[in-house]
Length: 302
Image (tube, helix red, strand yellow):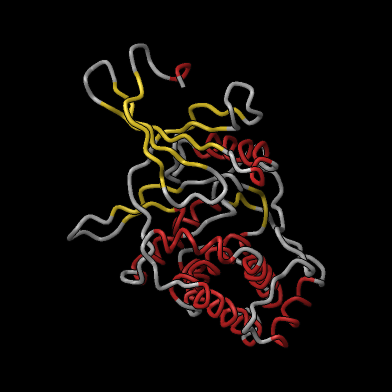
Protein backbone atom coordinates (compact mmCIF):
# COMPACT_ATOMS: atom_id res chain seq x y z
CA UNK A 1 0.00 0.00 0.00
CA UNK A 2 2.76 2.44 0.91
CA UNK A 3 4.04 2.38 -2.67
CA UNK A 4 0.73 3.70 -3.93
CA UNK A 5 0.03 6.47 -1.46
CA UNK A 6 1.15 10.04 -1.95
CA UNK A 7 3.96 11.44 0.20
CA UNK A 8 2.77 11.99 3.75
CA UNK A 9 -0.46 9.98 3.39
CA UNK A 10 -1.33 7.12 5.70
CA UNK A 11 -4.13 4.61 6.29
CA UNK A 12 -6.25 5.62 9.27
CA UNK A 13 -9.09 3.11 9.02
CA UNK A 14 -9.88 -0.25 7.41
CA UNK A 15 -13.49 -1.41 7.07
CA UNK A 16 -14.51 -4.86 5.83
CA UNK A 17 -17.13 -4.62 3.10
CA UNK A 18 -19.94 -7.17 3.03
CA UNK A 19 -21.19 -9.11 0.05
CA UNK A 20 -17.97 -10.63 -1.24
CA UNK A 21 -18.05 -14.36 -1.99
CA UNK A 22 -14.69 -15.12 -3.61
CA UNK A 23 -12.50 -12.41 -2.07
CA UNK A 24 -12.11 -10.17 0.97
CA UNK A 25 -13.03 -6.54 0.36
CA UNK A 26 -11.77 -3.66 2.47
CA UNK A 27 -12.52 0.04 2.29
CA UNK A 28 -9.41 1.96 3.35
CA UNK A 29 -9.64 5.52 4.61
CA UNK A 30 -6.54 7.49 3.69
CA UNK A 31 -5.53 10.64 5.59
CA UNK A 32 -4.15 13.25 3.23
CA UNK A 33 -1.63 15.99 3.94
CA UNK A 34 -4.22 18.73 3.39
CA UNK A 35 -6.26 17.48 6.32
CA UNK A 36 -8.93 15.64 4.32
CA UNK A 37 -9.41 11.95 3.62
CA UNK A 38 -10.11 9.75 0.63
CA UNK A 39 -11.21 6.14 0.28
CA UNK A 40 -9.68 3.23 -1.60
CA UNK A 41 -10.80 -0.38 -1.97
CA UNK A 42 -8.51 -3.39 -1.63
CA UNK A 43 -9.70 -6.76 -2.91
CA UNK A 44 -7.68 -9.72 -1.63
CA UNK A 45 -8.01 -13.38 -2.60
CA UNK A 46 -7.34 -15.49 0.50
CA UNK A 47 -9.68 -18.46 0.22
CA UNK A 48 -7.97 -21.63 -1.01
CA UNK A 49 -10.62 -22.24 -3.69
CA UNK A 50 -10.50 -18.69 -5.07
CA UNK A 51 -6.70 -18.68 -5.07
CA UNK A 52 -6.75 -21.18 -7.93
CA UNK A 53 -8.39 -18.56 -10.15
CA UNK A 54 -6.99 -15.39 -8.57
CA UNK A 55 -4.42 -14.65 -11.26
CA UNK A 56 -6.97 -14.96 -14.07
CA UNK A 57 -9.56 -12.91 -12.13
CA UNK A 58 -7.15 -10.10 -11.38
CA UNK A 59 -5.87 -9.97 -14.94
CA UNK A 60 -9.45 -9.77 -16.21
CA UNK A 61 -10.44 -7.06 -13.74
CA UNK A 62 -7.37 -4.90 -14.24
CA UNK A 63 -7.76 -5.07 -18.03
CA UNK A 64 -11.47 -4.25 -17.80
CA UNK A 65 -10.94 -1.23 -15.54
CA UNK A 66 -8.26 0.07 -17.89
CA UNK A 67 -10.48 -0.46 -20.95
CA UNK A 68 -13.50 1.19 -19.32
CA UNK A 69 -11.60 4.18 -17.98
CA UNK A 70 -13.15 7.27 -19.55
CA UNK A 71 -16.13 5.36 -20.97
CA UNK A 72 -19.79 5.97 -20.16
CA UNK A 73 -19.66 3.10 -17.67
CA UNK A 74 -18.97 4.32 -14.11
CA UNK A 75 -16.20 2.09 -12.73
CA UNK A 76 -13.46 2.38 -10.10
CA UNK A 77 -10.06 3.67 -11.17
CA UNK A 78 -7.39 1.00 -11.18
CA UNK A 79 -4.41 1.93 -8.99
CA UNK A 80 -2.39 -1.27 -8.75
CA UNK A 81 -2.69 -5.05 -8.81
CA UNK A 82 -0.52 -8.00 -7.85
CA UNK A 83 -1.98 -11.08 -9.52
CA UNK A 84 0.79 -13.46 -8.39
CA UNK A 85 1.31 -12.19 -4.81
CA UNK A 86 4.78 -11.01 -5.65
CA UNK A 87 4.54 -7.99 -3.36
CA UNK A 88 1.54 -8.93 -1.20
CA UNK A 89 0.77 -11.84 1.08
CA UNK A 90 -2.13 -12.74 -1.22
CA UNK A 91 -3.13 -11.79 -4.80
CA UNK A 92 -4.72 -8.32 -4.55
CA UNK A 93 -6.02 -5.35 -6.48
CA UNK A 94 -6.24 -1.72 -5.36
CA UNK A 95 -8.76 0.73 -6.79
CA UNK A 96 -10.63 3.89 -5.95
CA UNK A 97 -13.83 3.73 -3.94
CA UNK A 98 -17.06 4.40 -5.85
CA UNK A 99 -19.89 6.03 -3.85
CA UNK A 100 -23.33 4.49 -3.71
CA UNK A 101 -25.10 1.48 -2.26
CA UNK A 102 -26.37 -1.87 -3.45
CA UNK A 103 -30.16 -2.09 -3.33
CA UNK A 104 -31.74 -5.52 -3.00
CA UNK A 105 -35.21 -4.70 -1.68
CA UNK A 106 -38.36 -5.62 -3.56
CA UNK A 107 -39.57 -2.05 -3.14
CA UNK A 108 -38.61 0.06 -6.13
CA UNK A 109 -37.55 -2.83 -8.36
CA UNK A 110 -39.84 -1.52 -11.12
CA UNK A 111 -37.74 1.66 -11.23
CA UNK A 112 -34.36 -0.04 -10.97
CA UNK A 113 -34.75 -2.72 -13.66
CA UNK A 114 -34.84 -0.22 -16.57
CA UNK A 115 -31.73 1.46 -15.12
CA UNK A 116 -29.95 -1.88 -14.90
CA UNK A 117 -30.93 -2.68 -18.47
CA UNK A 118 -29.67 0.64 -19.85
CA UNK A 119 -26.42 0.24 -17.95
CA UNK A 120 -25.84 -3.21 -19.41
CA UNK A 121 -26.51 -1.87 -22.92
CA UNK A 122 -23.77 0.73 -22.32
CA UNK A 123 -21.35 -1.98 -21.19
CA UNK A 124 -22.00 -4.03 -24.32
CA UNK A 125 -21.41 -0.96 -26.50
CA UNK A 126 -17.81 -0.54 -25.24
CA UNK A 127 -15.17 -1.06 -27.90
CA UNK A 128 -12.25 -3.09 -26.58
CA UNK A 129 -8.89 -3.57 -28.25
CA UNK A 130 -7.48 -6.04 -27.51
CA UNK A 131 -10.53 -8.09 -26.71
CA UNK A 132 -11.03 -9.50 -23.21
CA UNK A 133 -10.49 -13.20 -22.73
CA UNK A 134 -13.28 -15.51 -23.89
CA UNK A 135 -16.11 -16.21 -21.44
CA UNK A 136 -16.09 -19.32 -19.27
CA UNK A 137 -19.18 -21.54 -19.36
CA UNK A 138 -19.17 -22.32 -15.60
CA UNK A 139 -21.30 -25.47 -15.82
CA UNK A 140 -21.88 -28.72 -17.71
CA UNK A 141 -24.78 -31.12 -17.93
CA UNK A 142 -23.00 -33.36 -15.41
CA UNK A 143 -22.43 -30.71 -12.73
CA UNK A 144 -26.00 -29.41 -12.36
CA UNK A 145 -27.47 -29.85 -8.87
CA UNK A 146 -31.22 -30.53 -8.99
CA UNK A 147 -33.08 -29.12 -5.95
CA UNK A 148 -34.84 -31.68 -3.77
CA UNK A 149 -38.36 -30.41 -4.46
CA UNK A 150 -37.74 -29.63 -8.14
CA UNK A 151 -39.75 -31.02 -11.04
CA UNK A 152 -37.34 -33.77 -12.12
CA UNK A 153 -38.82 -34.10 -15.62
CA UNK A 154 -38.50 -30.37 -16.35
CA UNK A 155 -34.96 -30.27 -15.03
CA UNK A 156 -33.97 -33.30 -17.12
CA UNK A 157 -35.22 -31.49 -20.22
CA UNK A 158 -33.32 -28.35 -19.19
CA UNK A 159 -30.11 -30.32 -18.69
CA UNK A 160 -30.55 -31.78 -22.17
CA UNK A 161 -30.42 -28.23 -23.53
CA UNK A 162 -26.79 -28.05 -22.35
CA UNK A 163 -25.96 -31.18 -24.31
CA UNK A 164 -26.78 -29.42 -27.54
CA UNK A 165 -24.29 -27.41 -29.60
CA UNK A 166 -23.17 -24.01 -28.32
CA UNK A 167 -24.86 -21.36 -30.48
CA UNK A 168 -22.72 -19.07 -32.60
CA UNK A 169 -22.68 -15.40 -31.59
CA UNK A 170 -21.31 -11.95 -32.30
CA UNK A 171 -19.10 -11.19 -29.32
CA UNK A 172 -19.23 -8.11 -27.10
CA UNK A 173 -17.55 -6.97 -23.90
CA UNK A 174 -19.30 -8.77 -21.02
CA UNK A 175 -19.25 -7.96 -17.33
CA UNK A 176 -20.02 -11.65 -16.76
CA UNK A 177 -21.33 -11.07 -13.22
CA UNK A 178 -23.77 -8.22 -13.86
CA UNK A 179 -26.37 -8.37 -11.09
CA UNK A 180 -27.92 -6.04 -8.51
CA UNK A 181 -25.21 -6.81 -5.96
CA UNK A 182 -22.52 -5.43 -8.28
CA UNK A 183 -24.33 -2.20 -9.18
CA UNK A 184 -24.24 0.82 -6.89
CA UNK A 185 -27.15 3.26 -6.66
CA UNK A 186 -27.68 6.75 -5.33
CA UNK A 187 -30.95 6.36 -3.47
CA UNK A 188 -31.24 9.81 -1.92
CA UNK A 189 -34.64 10.61 -0.48
CA UNK A 190 -37.09 12.48 -2.72
CA UNK A 191 -35.01 11.73 -5.82
CA UNK A 192 -35.26 9.08 -8.49
CA UNK A 193 -32.63 6.32 -8.14
CA UNK A 194 -29.55 6.55 -10.33
CA UNK A 195 -26.57 4.27 -10.89
CA UNK A 196 -23.26 5.54 -9.50
CA UNK A 197 -21.00 2.59 -10.27
CA UNK A 198 -20.56 -0.94 -11.59
CA UNK A 199 -18.04 -3.03 -9.64
CA UNK A 200 -16.48 -6.50 -9.52
CA UNK A 201 -15.07 -7.00 -13.00
CA UNK A 202 -13.19 -10.19 -12.12
CA UNK A 203 -15.13 -12.15 -14.73
CA UNK A 204 -14.92 -9.59 -17.56
CA UNK A 205 -15.05 -11.51 -20.83
CA UNK A 206 -15.79 -11.58 -24.52
CA UNK A 207 -18.99 -13.38 -25.45
CA UNK A 208 -22.70 -13.16 -26.35
CA UNK A 209 -24.84 -10.36 -24.91
CA UNK A 210 -27.44 -13.06 -24.18
CA UNK A 211 -25.15 -14.46 -21.49
CA UNK A 212 -24.90 -11.23 -19.48
CA UNK A 213 -28.65 -10.70 -19.81
CA UNK A 214 -29.29 -14.29 -18.74
CA UNK A 215 -27.11 -13.88 -15.65
CA UNK A 216 -28.86 -10.75 -14.44
CA UNK A 217 -32.23 -12.32 -15.26
CA UNK A 218 -31.44 -15.34 -13.07
CA UNK A 219 -30.44 -13.15 -10.16
CA UNK A 220 -33.52 -10.95 -10.44
CA UNK A 221 -35.69 -14.09 -10.59
CA UNK A 222 -34.20 -15.31 -7.31
CA UNK A 223 -34.26 -11.90 -5.62
CA UNK A 224 -37.69 -10.69 -6.63
CA UNK A 225 -39.57 -13.60 -8.18
CA UNK A 226 -39.32 -15.68 -11.40
CA UNK A 227 -41.30 -13.15 -13.48
CA UNK A 228 -38.46 -10.64 -13.19
CA UNK A 229 -36.17 -12.77 -15.33
CA UNK A 230 -38.04 -12.26 -18.61
CA UNK A 231 -38.95 -8.71 -17.58
CA UNK A 232 -35.28 -7.78 -17.45
CA UNK A 233 -34.62 -9.32 -20.86
CA UNK A 234 -37.48 -7.26 -22.29
CA UNK A 235 -36.17 -4.11 -20.59
CA UNK A 236 -32.74 -4.73 -22.13
CA UNK A 237 -34.20 -4.83 -25.63
CA UNK A 238 -36.36 -1.78 -24.92
CA UNK A 239 -33.17 0.06 -23.94
CA UNK A 240 -31.63 -0.73 -27.33
CA UNK A 241 -29.83 -3.95 -26.49
CA UNK A 242 -29.59 -6.69 -29.11
CA UNK A 243 -30.19 -10.34 -28.30
CA UNK A 244 -30.23 -13.39 -30.53
CA UNK A 245 -33.09 -13.52 -33.02
CA UNK A 246 -33.43 -17.25 -32.40
CA UNK A 247 -35.85 -18.31 -29.66
CA UNK A 248 -33.88 -21.53 -29.18
CA UNK A 249 -30.62 -19.61 -28.78
CA UNK A 250 -32.13 -17.30 -26.18
CA UNK A 251 -33.41 -20.31 -24.31
CA UNK A 252 -29.98 -21.96 -24.43
CA UNK A 253 -28.17 -19.07 -22.71
CA UNK A 254 -30.89 -18.46 -20.11
CA UNK A 255 -31.17 -22.13 -19.22
CA UNK A 256 -27.37 -22.46 -19.10
CA UNK A 257 -27.02 -19.60 -16.64
CA UNK A 258 -29.91 -20.71 -14.43
CA UNK A 259 -28.52 -24.25 -14.25
CA UNK A 260 -25.07 -22.90 -13.41
CA UNK A 261 -26.68 -21.12 -10.47
CA UNK A 262 -27.96 -24.47 -9.15
CA UNK A 263 -24.45 -25.52 -8.19
CA UNK A 264 -23.95 -22.72 -5.68
CA UNK A 265 -27.36 -21.13 -5.19
CA UNK A 266 -27.03 -21.04 -1.41
CA UNK A 267 -23.64 -19.31 -1.48
CA UNK A 268 -25.18 -16.76 -3.86
CA UNK A 269 -28.09 -16.10 -1.50
CA UNK A 270 -26.11 -15.93 1.76
CA UNK A 271 -24.86 -12.34 1.17
CA UNK A 272 -28.42 -11.29 0.31
CA UNK A 273 -29.62 -12.55 3.70
CA UNK A 274 -26.70 -10.82 5.41
CA UNK A 275 -27.74 -7.60 3.65
CA UNK A 276 -31.24 -7.84 5.11
CA UNK A 277 -33.18 -10.11 2.75
CA UNK A 278 -33.84 -12.64 5.52
CA UNK A 279 -36.91 -13.78 3.59
CA UNK A 280 -34.65 -15.47 1.05
CA UNK A 281 -34.28 -18.71 2.97
CA UNK A 282 -32.61 -21.71 1.30
CA UNK A 283 -36.01 -23.20 0.53
CA UNK A 284 -37.41 -20.01 -0.98
CA UNK A 285 -34.39 -19.51 -3.24
CA UNK A 286 -34.41 -23.10 -4.48
CA UNK A 287 -38.16 -22.96 -5.14
CA UNK A 288 -37.74 -19.74 -7.13
CA UNK A 289 -34.97 -21.30 -9.17
CA UNK A 290 -37.17 -24.32 -9.88
CA UNK A 291 -40.05 -22.06 -10.92
CA UNK A 292 -37.77 -20.01 -13.15
CA UNK A 293 -36.37 -23.09 -14.88
CA UNK A 294 -39.91 -24.30 -15.47
CA UNK A 295 -40.86 -20.90 -16.88
CA UNK A 296 -37.93 -20.97 -19.30
CA UNK A 297 -38.72 -24.48 -20.50
CA UNK A 298 -42.48 -23.91 -20.83
CA UNK A 299 -42.06 -20.63 -22.69
CA UNK A 300 -39.19 -21.86 -24.86
CA UNK A 301 -36.99 -18.98 -23.68
CA UNK A 302 -39.44 -16.21 -24.57
